Image (tube, helix red, strand yellow):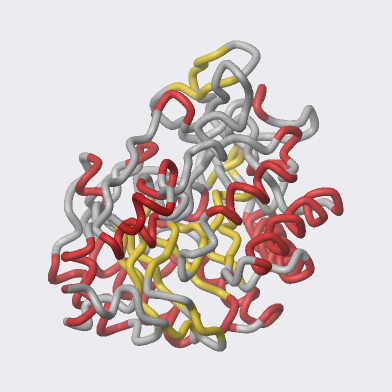
Length: 370
């Protein structure tokens, strides 16, 4: 019987309803890159999670690489996100915004006319990108950021973190995983720079650490977490490289010095990526002693075991939250989980954007009791 998973948990200065995190998941419903009432309804439906981490949200126009993803750098976006945070808080939930700059994972048709695709190095990512205008298109070669421009992007993240507080978020998750801009700096396949942001593991980590340090100074360490994906293979980064373990152990130790509220480790083994070795997870846990979040194909039994053993402090669940707005109740009661419709993960159904988004039902009272 799971006891820890469904009991209250501390995260910095806040008390969560349980040890369950709703993982960040892109849903592509932010028309004009501005969230609104539909997003507020979606997240409020899932507010029984101990912590919600929103979909990836760009700190600048250059980071809006996917169709219909939200940003957090304009007054309109702040107002839209305020609808979301108010709705989640009204249900007793807590919510962090995930700040994600897509970097080279992008296409001009998904961006404003005055935006451009930038990255650590001028190396195109393999694969195609969906555009609403011309469907799948090859991802172009990005422009390499100058050293001065890298520092400007750091400031964009910090400014977006300040706006997150203004919008009512409980905190910010820095997205340093899954082949997006920060991960592009961490990974030598996409980062072939020769300045202070390239070469050694320490230099490749500098961009992430300067963002984290700036956010801590701006909004407080108790409001800043980070997500990383060692051994991740998404978006054409190398899943392994010569100093990969040293890279992430150094990063974890430096993040602990900054006293970030959490470190969130992604293990995409269940989705076909190489497994993050158990020894590396244990070593990261030793380096980072604040809240430690694990995610990747969890069920209740494995989640409870990792919590009770101290391997993790919180457990993140992803895709199950898409079709089960009341996932926490279903897991606690051992109820059957509703299947999701992959065709509406990133696109509307025939009747509109609410399909496959806010129209998944919660358990009826009779089902819940059964």
